[in-house]
Length: 265
Image (cartoon, rainbow, N blue to C red; front, side, top):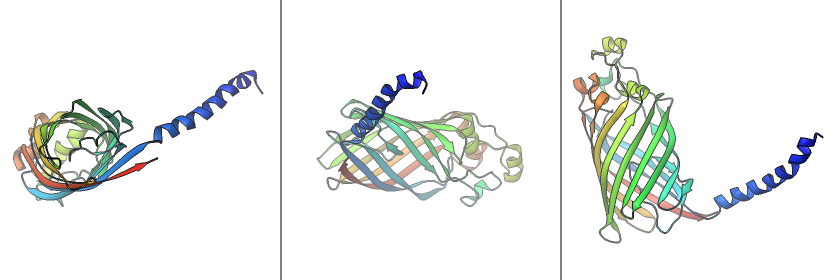
């Protein structure tokens, strides 16, 4: 056996014993899993002025702290791999249900946005006890090839032990590929759809404000009523799909419910 391997054996043996111990230490402790769903009325597609009822899963996983972290309907499926109470970060994902001419006659002649998803990372920070700052960056899978993300700030206050009010500004952004999938109209699509051809560029997609009233029905069950307004910006607002068949003003109203499981490992 070469001397280099013999010399490395003690180090490898120590590493082999340390890594499982570190993994065990990381997983050990108290955790929570919050699952549920939201139902809301929202535009038929991004930039549309017709509305329909939609559904969305709500899933969050992380370490238990002195209190369960603030959560919002805007939060996508996330796992708090790093969780210090005032700071959380980890992987996040979102289902993308797509868009085609079966959803609306306004989309006839446009290439569909396929069903798929987005995977990325999130981070959230509590600079004070009543304010959460959160950001997500995600890459499209199957539905589009672009990068997109969201920024949000939520101030929250418990008006009673069971009722919380919250709200704050929102912003979304995306790359050229993301904007082209949702807002671009190629020359061929223009002929087929009757829309003006449009080449979309990345940037800020929308800015707005959202708020919610949350009722803690039990120690593990929460329900909420929420509403949001967002205004499409830049290349999204200038899209011929939005200008000729939709609106840059987007509204949303809905309800949600979640159940929290507490467990130890």
